[in-house]
Length: 105
View (cartoon, rainbow, N blue to C red):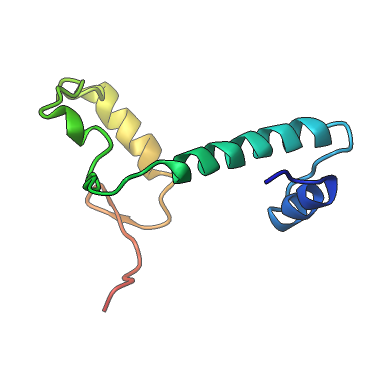
């Protein structure tokens, strides 16, 4: 399926995007490439292939790169000064915590 200039302008209007006439060709090419990829994926036979709960689940146990769980905020007087500066922006606070309106009954 190839998109026309009218299709691109309609999609841009629906998405509330400004597409200038100079950008029209590039946008059409990109969207057509996306639609072509979708067509190729739909043409593949997936009969008997179980859906994945996670895109990398087929690789078994995957070692995720996690950062070390460590305190990164300043401790001591510098930390207290930073907390006070942040709490000064809060519309409501008590005992160093932000107060927010109840949204669930």
